[in-house]
Length: 354
Image (cartoon, rainbow, N blue to C red; front, side, top):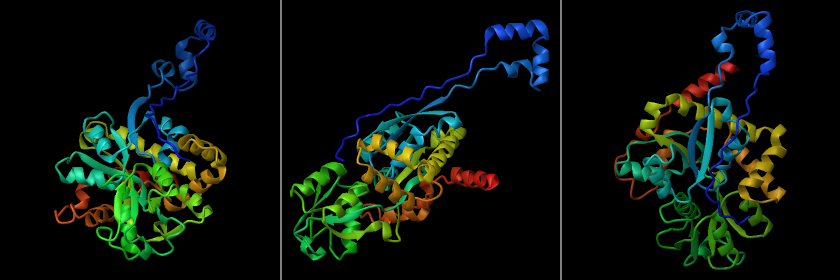
């Protein structure tokens, strides 16, 4: 399942029904346009108004299991129901993603907590988290077969995507959970995305790394040493949050709300057993894989890890801050980077529908 997502700008064509012009003329000649409007209870201007065009919206995402919720939502047509034509744009690094958001090249982004909170702490107060598709750690710490206990990792190489990234934080957190000091006991090395780290682990170039579904399945099947499954640890952390900028919230609050509605509907679609085959096909496109067992593992795992709405909490941001040595002493207030109004409205709408 090694892959490197190329930039994706995907638009969905809308199909509108066009009235038969001959029929329109005939109706006009016989009973008149006003009568037609009266028969269906609408004024002539409403009867023949054109559908409102879709709002194009650039949305950035990094490659990862939790962001597959967004991909499925986009491919399933969930956003079009709310008047949005989403253009997904793959951006590999957290820092580059934040820069794209601040420059307004994209207006919404799926992004982990580390890069966003760090930028916000350094003055980028425009950044606002409004939700999350991943609010819990979804990794395992896995090592080569010849390393049987966490203690045997001392002096060994542990791979992450980038130093300072979410995967870097997760790896250090996992190492501490199994009794190791990540600053002293191991060498943390940056090797890029999950596929590249997996290849390095299999090739013996590193001794351990952290992986998400579906690589968790491959690790088990390969008989590798798994020291901790963080999905089973009660720890909130923004692994893939929905972040935008305050100026966009002020200028287009309904567009932001519609994005959240579409995302929530897409997440429901993802988890619905009736859509299993279609979701697996979409995941195959996302991961560029036809390995059905691995794709089903991904769907199963994330359906359990991220139930309900795209929730985010102050606690998840607090944990980002508390576990980053550069942020912990700054006296940051997690609630200041959050705008929970859209989630609250979404919850009210769902309650009213029920």
